[in-house]
Amino acid sequence: MKNAFLLLVAIGLALLGAALAPVFLNDPGMVHIRVWGWTVEMSVLVLVLAVLVTWMVFWLAARLWRMPAESARRLREQRGLKQLEKGLLALTEGDWVAAERALQKSASQEGRTTARYLAAAQAADGQDAEERAEYYLEQADSGGRKTRFLVELTRARLMVENGRYDEAVTVLEALQARRKRHSQVLELLARCYRELGRWQDLVKLLPLMEKSGLLDEERATAMRERAASASLEQAGDLETLQSAWQALPRAMRKQPVPVRAYAVRASRLGSPDLTESVLRTALGQQWDPALVLAYGDPAATDTNKRMKQCEKWLKDHPDDSALHLALGRLCARDELWGKARHHMIRSLELEPTIGGYDSLGQLLERKGELEVAMTCFRNALRVSQGESPLPLPAETARLNAPQPEGSTASAGSE
Image (cartoon, rainbow, N blue to C red):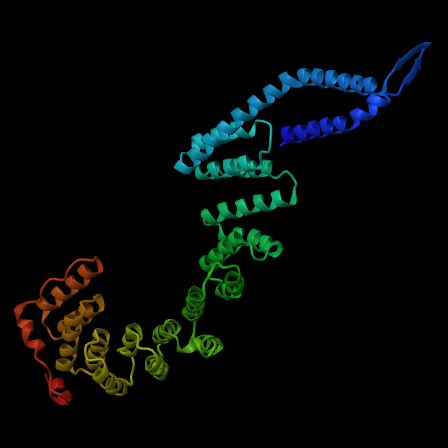
């Protein structure tokens, strides 16, 4: 760029000289200079040429004088860049020791060192050398506003990677106050809020993440549902659970994820009957196997009402594995053994699941059929490990016989 500029200047001066040449040929002009008793006479053109020649001589002398120092500086810069490249490659490979050594040598050379010290801090952190990492971060902070932001962002990132979420939140919140839509800051801050269980703070952060393009509407909705579920799961008593549930937006109280979280928490707090209408309403709007299983909670006392509702749903969903399992659990709760076994077996025929085998195993164990029960428990373990279940013993074939409708009384006598 500099050489091109000088070339343009030279061309411009040549053109100017060509334009003025006819003028000086007709009237070259005279210049008289008296210095210390000496008198010098020359034309204007000769004076201009003398000045240019003198300037060129001094310029060449200065360049020759600076050439050794500039050559040495360029050599140091080249060595520093080679060490920087070596360090960054080692950092990518995870060779923290080699990376730190090379980056340290790179940073000792002249030139800008902020990026080199930041990379060295990451290499030191990879070796669990927190003191050295902090030293490099301090060296990288040269005082500029942008540099301080990058240093603090790197410090926060290292804290997050090391699980120091409480410390990282303080740094990230300060950075977010300065640059509200910075993508890295928002992502790290959202991760800290998730890890610390600060779901309300995460929900407040989601609009900014959407505006910054970090989340689409689907992911943002999923995170809101997860936050709502977490607030319900953390309820320590029934009053707190009800307050948290009522605090959710009306639309959220119809979504499967928070509804299931509410149902599970209510059951664990000993009040599963509170969830019957909530689950039934949610399933009426959106069919979801997880909600069906929650509806078939055997801890509920209103099992008769729930069984009747499940039998209504069964007309529209005859091949739904979760619905058969839920109905089987409710029948077992009321000691309708035959009907319970029938629906549990049908559930497993449609889809072998851990819950299905475990529920059938418990039922058969209560009926004294220990061999088949043990096979069911083993199958539950195999399914949990991704293995195919073992076939049940031949005597369970009789359980597959279809149950006639309205056989509740006879099934219960089995």
